[in-house]
Image (cartoon, rainbow, N blue to C red):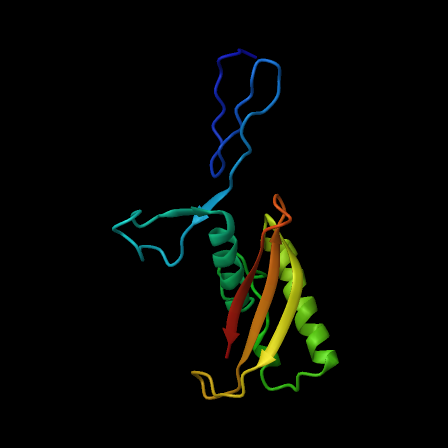
Amino acid sequence: MAANQTVKVFGKIPPRISVDGTTSKKAAIFGLNFPLGSNRETGGIFKKISGVAMIKAAVKQLLLTEKGERLMLPNYGCRLRKFLFQPLDENTFTQIKDEIKFSFYNYIVGANIRKIAVFPLGESGPAGGNSMKVVLTLGLDENETQIFDVEATIG
């Protein structure tokens, strides 16, 4: 393999490798900012984001998507709307937690769950039914001291 050969990696910045074989820069993971085209002045239609902002957007999108809504990924999302009219007891909370954990560990890269909290809001949602708030406390895999919350209102 030639020493001057470059490797193209889409979605990541490849680390720089020095002559002695050590890396000088960690690889960064980038994603698209959603909704697409929301900020045309500062990044165009396909604006890239990374780090905490990317993970927050990805987790919120995962929590608000029902399984079967995405055409090419029928298992993407969480079935959280089915819990809206059930009492929030220990059994229901365990089912919600299992649903979130299963989807999270299959589709989110770069973070881990520290804590899951579910609160009934006691107010009618857009469809006239109950609503609940899900709060995930997450930590980055690369930086264990950086902890942040992601909130989503279901209903």
